[in-house]
Image 1 (tube, rainbow, N blue to C red):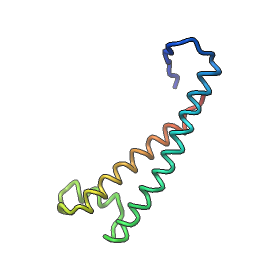
Image 2 (image 1 turned 180 degrees about the vertical axis):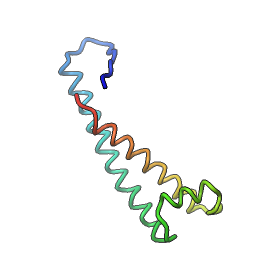
Image 3 (image 1 turned 180 degrees about the horizontal axis):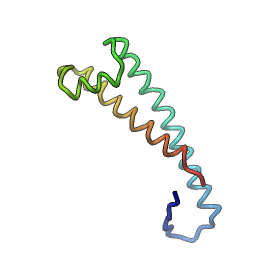
Image 4 (image 1 turned 45 degrees about the vertical axis):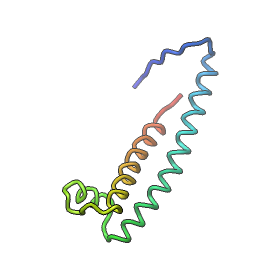
Length: 96
């Protein structure tokens, strides 16, 4: 896929490429760090409640888990983890 960008300003292609690559690299590092942290949190919940995070999401969505704070936290962390994994997949696929 090709994407066209409209850049305001007088920059060389090299300057643009370097700036975009640096931003993508930074976002990749941050995503990897957060994925590691969120994965660890999910693993702790999985051990505590004896089920994997995907199953907990389904049970939470269906109302089977109740309204405990842990379940809301777990749900939020798992949603964040899924979003970060998707973002990392996209960032890793970009070639400049």
